[in-house]
Structures are given as structure tokens and as C-alpha cells.
Image 1 (cartoon, rainbow, N blue to C red):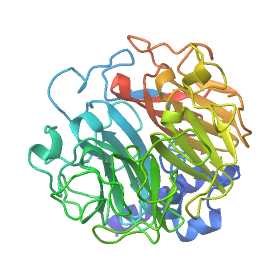
Image 2: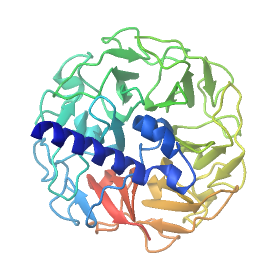
Image 3: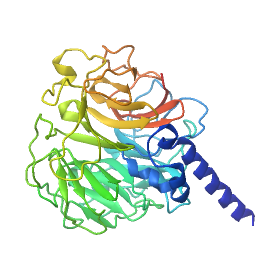
Amino acid sequence: MLLLKQVSKQLAVALLFLLAGCPDDDGGGPSTAALNENPAAANDYGGSGVVLNSGIAGPFVLFQNDSVSRLVNRDGGAVKANGVSNPYSLGAYVDPNDGNRIKLFVNDRGNHRVLIFNTIPQDATALPDVVVGQPNFTAGTANAGGATSDVGFDESVHMSVCSNGKMLVADRNNNRVMAFNRVPTANGTAADFVIGQADFVTNGAATTDKGLNHPYAAYCMANKLFVVEQGNHRILVFDPIPTATNPTASYVIGQPDMVTGTSGCTAGKLNSPYEILRYGDTFFLADGGNQRVLQFDTIPAATGALPTAVLGQTGFTSCLQNKGNATPSNSSLAFPNGLAAKGNLLAVSDHTNNRTMLFDLPITSNQSASKQIGQPDFITATNVTPPTANSVTTTKGLIFDQQYLWIGDGGNNRLAVIPLP
């Protein structure tokens, strides 16, 4: 009876945790009524997953001894559970197969693994519960130390969890997306099927309706799977969400067809896209190599869809870093690669400017940011060394949490929880 009460309490807390922070409270995302029926629907919005309401007591950093440290693997030494090497992105997702528990996921790119925290960390002492891509927390070689297989990654750069509980990992150098039918609960769990390859032992790049070239993200959204490819400068869309190896895509965003993989600087072309975000009915795309964020009024539903607004550039045919200027401004970007939204704010990870930009919603083309995190002003792009509690370097992932923003601080080998300005 006591165990039953504890489980019931955990489920209730998870539901309140999610509902208190879901985008609907501020005008976007799923309705509260819908989330009461299916809390995992919050996984359906891209970015870095759900908006948190974790109740943390204050700012902190994970994976370092203090806010001025930036060593690989925490101390510059061997791989360990409480250190990382160039973490590339992060995510907070509901696990519908574990009582709708909200979990934190960190993509530890340099150690070729995904770290899973079964509860949201409350301070700097938190340790991950599960590692995927490696057999244990002290291993960190590509492909789990062997050949390409169903258990290892070669630069895991992104992961997500679908509303049905499937977990997806973008396995960059193996040119594939690894699919797990549920979030792993044991170290070294093997994938159930693979997207972008015919089997688990091949890893060649391709530009087809089945093949991938350096995928950087994969999201379930609106009952479809969106795979963001840096190498093919496109987003392949699979409708419905695949359930078996080597599926065929239905349409493409950023290219005129499934066999073109060139970059371009137009409304209909992309250059090294990184992340997508659905907020309400609006669809945002971080087009990193074109130094811009594109807005679509609705989720693209067919090949040839065009954006309606752009951030970071004056128009759809200008694509220079910081608009061609030597220094940044309040309306320029340098390789944006992460997106998050809450209320009237859109957060953009401005990677090469070592900052996070905050834009007021709704956006208009060439809009200026209202605030930023990581720099003293809008015209500075310093790599602060050693870092401070509020500085970031080559940022890569964003999660809103009450009055804080969780930031994947790749250049400083840490995850920083920083107060919103």
C-alpha cells in the first residue's frame, strides 16, 4: 500500500510539473485539457522538449567543479559520469512508459553517448542514471569501441522523445538516426531500428529519399518525423512516423527534390540547418550556415514550402554572418543552432557569438532582440576564459525553466542554468 501511494504521488507530481510549465500557459503548445489526457503530447513541439517548472532553488552548472572551470570530463582526465566532452545539445522530455516522468537528456558528443537523468537535476551534484551509446559511464570511444552496430554512436549530437515514447538519436558520423522503441533504462541498450541506413552495420552518406548525410536532429511532430540534415542542407519528412528500418521519406524542406543536397541562400534553400521548433501554429527553423532563423506560419506539409519571416538577416537572399559586419548587433546572428519558446519570448542559441538571443513574439523580419545572455552587450562576442556563472561559449541547446534558461554550454564542457535577464 505504501509503495502504491508513493507511485501515485510521483505521477501526480509529474503531471503538475508538466502542466505548470507547458507552453499553453503562455499562449502556445497543447491545451491543458489535452495534456490531462496525454501529458506526453508536450514532446510534440521540437526544440529541446518541454518547458520546465522544476522548482530549482537557484542557478548552477552541471559537469564542472565550479562556474569558472571548463575542463573536458570535468578534470581533463578519463571519461566519467559527472563530466562531459563538448556536450552538443540537451532535452527535457516526458517518458510515457515511465509514469509520464520528465527526464533530462544530455548529448555528450565527444564521448559518443547520451546521458539520461531520470529526474530533473536540482543542483550541481546530480548524476545521470543511464548512459546510451556506451556500455558504462567510463567508456567514451566512437561506436562503443567497435565497428558500426546497434549499440554505439559516432558523435551523438541530438536526441528527442516522441509522444508515443520512442527515443531518437542523431548519430552524425554514421549518417543515421537510431530509434529506440522506448527510453532505455539500462546502460548500453541496443537500438530497435535505424533510419538512413539499410541495416545497423552500414554508415555511408547518401542523398536520396532513404539516405542521410550528417543528421543533426530528429523530431516527432504532428504525427510525422522530421530529420534535419546538415550534410544535405535539408529536412526530410517521414509521414507517418517510421516503425522499422530504412523507411522512405514523404517530402523535403529546403530542397526542390529528394536527390538534391546543395546549400543555397534563398527562401527555399538551406545551409547546414540544425534545429526546428513548433510553437502554437508557428514553425521555426535554425538555418545555421545561412546565419538566420526562418519562420513558417504553419508546419510545412509538402516539398517547396516557403518561410514567411526571417531573423538575423534583412531578407531571404542575404546570409552573411552578423550581416557581413565584423561585430554582432542586436539583430544579427552567427550560426544559430538552438531554439526554445515560452510566453512571448523566442530564445535563439547564437553559437559563434557566444550568446543566447531573446526575441519578443510574434516576430517580424529583421527584428532586433530585446535581451541576450552571455555577453555584456549586443556588440560583443567574446569567448570568456575562464568562464563565469553567466557566460557561455558555442552554445547548443536551450530549455526554459521558470525564471531560468538551461543552456548547453559546449565550449565550456558544461550545462549552465542561468537566470533570465
